[in-house]
Image (cartoon, rainbow, N blue to C red; front, side, top):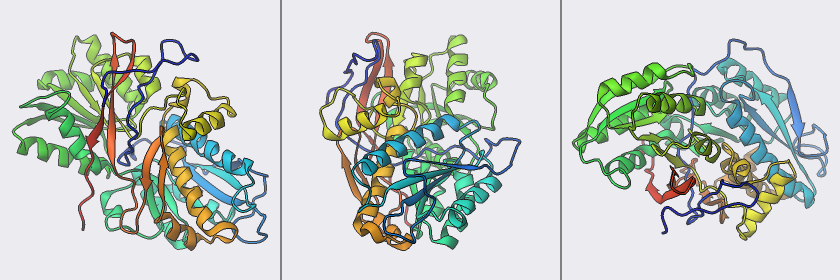
Length: 431
């Protein structure tokens, strides 16, 4: 493995991305249910990616398959959901251009949850009852998608959440999947980065900063336990709410004497935390949970103290891998091009999740039912070299699982560089 390397793009001067051994993670990326809007009105839905018909899996064999997305299109996590939609549309456009699934095109219907649990339930209910979706992507916030689970089960709709509590994923439950994984699978990765390469802290003093949620708490409880068992200390545990200004939290980190921070916060909060620490003269390293940041934000912040875990490798648009070529061309049709744009928040990982759903639909063809899609999802094993490899589910594992990539901004190279492609994940314990 080559470390510290980069790949330049003619499309985006001074913005490159390191090409690495193609690994895929499926752990964690959820945000907290505390990120809510004051408004809770149910949103209207929109559609894209097909002929505009709203018929679902029943009826004519040439009717489109309706696929839902019930997530926070507006609100603090909107940038992540925008990336998800772009990834899904890119995957669907390729299938539709070649005639669909045995003649049935894929129709994406979106419904805004506004980051509110009750609205999340209403949004998925509408997709199930009015739009007859055969499957749906759920909210990226663990608590909100948790609220959607009973709806998915009642209507037997395969639901691909952003992430969920470990208890919801182990043992695996019919119809319930995650796109990113579960935060608790990141425990070994976070501690390995701190105790081994690249930080090599023999006796770390760890500050934990995270958004309060039912999926984040098990992760950081496990991280704290492992750090203490290995001889380190947890000097600060700072659960936060929806505030975007983390200057006070940065002061807490400095006062605690921490020599490393681990976090699970949204990109705007990471920006505030890192800038506040920098402004105070602190160079404490930050181990950022997968999906906290993206290539785009790392280029923006240019902060070498951030060590970003990634769900999948940053995509090199100059790669000749067929999967990358298809991905780049599909995004270009949406007006998305260049290293920074194609590596936007959550685009690639959601593209892989959409491709997994497409593979499941191809198994049953033009006559898929919801229950058949659920069964076939458990057989999917996806390989997209240059984007994501071994994105898979099984009957006992409804979250994708492998390893993490690790990135850092390099001031000397004026670019984001790959440090590792082998950061270990850990499976959820069997119940």
